[in-house]
Image (cartoon, rainbow, N blue to C red; front, side):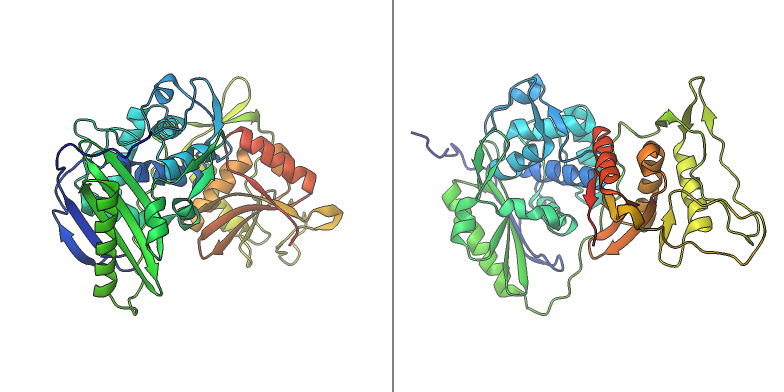
Length: 439
């Protein structure tokens, strides 16, 4: 019979309660004591996974090869086998819902190449969030010397998880979910079932940590986040969290302005820092739009190095220069930028602004290559993608669409066949992509 583990000693206790909308502290106790976070660690692992997907580093459909190290992680685990390949989306589900250690390690290795490199990225991201008393050593949270955090820092991380990537947050509210090889149950389902309004976030347990939990709940216009370290059992921890949530709701009002935490600086994978971006196909013509008739001056062309196979070597600075050139030379009143500019007419008639291409011949389709925090970042990704996949994107429109969640990077004016082909080719390069049908 499977029994709930019982802590053999009293782990240090700490707690924090905040109004999630404003970040105002409503209660704290030992909130800055550095303690073992256990599987609360996986919130950062998942945060970075969401960040990597949204910024085009890796696709949810990426087939991750499981290493021996990941497969050998102790329970809780999904049961992955060394050499097995499984989509990243299933690893994310297993880490978020079941708190699977093997899945967490596999996520870290898939994104950064090794767990040690991933831990360094975790620490960079924590620092950018203001988690000043946290040091991560691994992706899963099993006890390791120096792997420590605080109730305050984990509350901060929970708030970022809630507001920075709301489209993924629903995972933490799932009572069960299919994780590729089997259906797994949520480690936090007792609280989710017992406390009205609870919708996440993450549990944790080790002998050294005790029973930890970061929980979020919403009642009407109010939302509260409560964190507990050092519970003596699942039951006593949950009881304490319920008390803290009640306390939080009683101490905050309904008319509180929403002040979301600022997104931490995105640095991307350390594997790509300082590296050259290579385009695998020889370039016969530039995608840089030509000046419109009547324009004065032209932006200088950044140097492009071509190797002896005819492969273009584009430095990151060239990408940035091209974006500025494209914005100056081809951005229209509607915010649409041409991926392929029409040649300038020989005679200088009245200036002609092209705002869209013809949609005849079934060219009503497009593709999306990610959502970004700024228009500049979306434009940069569009140009990088256009350079990487010229054969299918030649003649399409680069378009940035702003919505409440950020800036969507789209290529428009394609046939369904071309859009499908472009997405398949981009996904093979681990670039996030999905097709957009006629609207």
